[in-house]
Image (cartoon, rainbow, N blue to C red; front, side, top):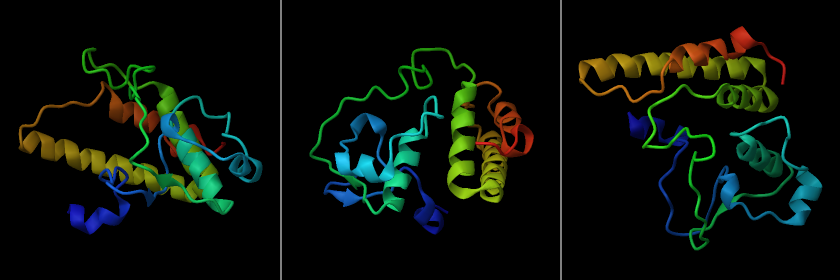
Amino acid sequence: MTKLLQRWVIAQPIAAEPCETDWVAGASMIIRREVLETAGLMDEGYFMYYEEMDFCLQAKRSGWPCWYVPESRVVHFVGQSSGVTDPNRKLKRMPSYVFESRRRYFLKNHGWLYAVLADAAWASTHLVWQVRRVIQRKPNCDPPKLFSDFLLNSVLLKGGQV
C-alpha cells in the first residue's frame, strides 16, 4: 500500500543530498529577505503547527522553491513546547489548536470542499487503522479522545471560516 500512495507520503525519508521539497520545519528555516518581500510574513492566525507549511506554500506560489539541505544542523526538540511528543509524559489530549491550525491550513489554501475531503480521508483511515490495530493486537498509542476531538474540530462541525 505504501508504494501505491508514495506520491502522497508527507514524511518523506531524510535525503542525503540537497533537494527541493514542499516544506521544512519552521525550526530549521533560513529565509531570504526577498522571499518575505514577495510571499509575505508567516500568517499570525496560526497559534502553533501548520504555519511553516502555509508559509512554504505561499513562497512557492510566489515563485520561490523550498530546499532541504542535509548539511545544515539544527537541534529541534519536536513537540517539547506543547508536550505533544514527550515520551515521558502520560498521554494527554491533543490541544485544540492543533486541529484549528489544520483546519485553517486546508481552508485557506485549498478551500472548503478540499478541507471536507481531507477531514473525511483522515477520519476514515483512522477508523480503518483502529480496526487493523485491534485485529493485529497492537497497542493504542493515540492521545485520549483523538477521534472525537478531531470530529468536533472538523470543517463540518466547526465551520469554514479561516
